[in-house]
Length: 270
Image (tube, rainbow, N blue to C red; front, side, top):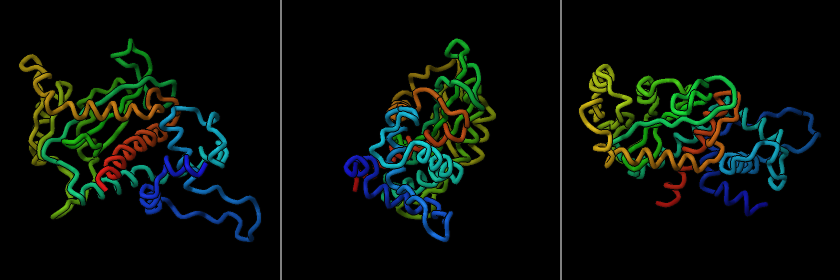
């Protein structure tokens, strides 16, 4: 079991996680009771659920804590925005090492089927079946910078402004923190003049394909990185289909997938 926990939560990731996890609440100050399940084992179990796609009830007992304990801790950490904070810490580490390329960022979205819950809607690309949509912005190397979810019938253009605003101030190797890309690439789903004006007002150059004028394939040599990141997100099998009723839990799994992508890059350069 120790080897499995070590593989899913290596020491470097565990040290970063300890910086953002809320302190443990003492429920029985008088002592006694059952020993609290370890955070590292619980985190490994959550990552196993995210990457394998199994249900909470199918969680193998080798991790130690039972599946209700793991799910309860997952819900607590999701409410505390632990996954978003850990993702930002990893981005800070990458930014301080000069591994984030802000010169060309790309925006895109992907739809997944959803069984039920809030932020679901008829998917126009899947015969109107209920679904949700994942929106993301990546840097030039494909590292996720900003993430969001919505119903599948929300137009891509409506996600641009919240995503750009949602980029956190990230450390740089030199100078102040940065949160604005130099240029943003998008497909024809973002072809609206008011979005171009909004980007220009924030000092962001845009490269968005125009409907009926140019082909989206011309931007492929720059936009392929975000499509590759979408395939990286699919490496977390829990995102192949939305099973969570609560949108914050679905967003939590998206955040876990993004931080795992960033942590792999961080591990490779260390």
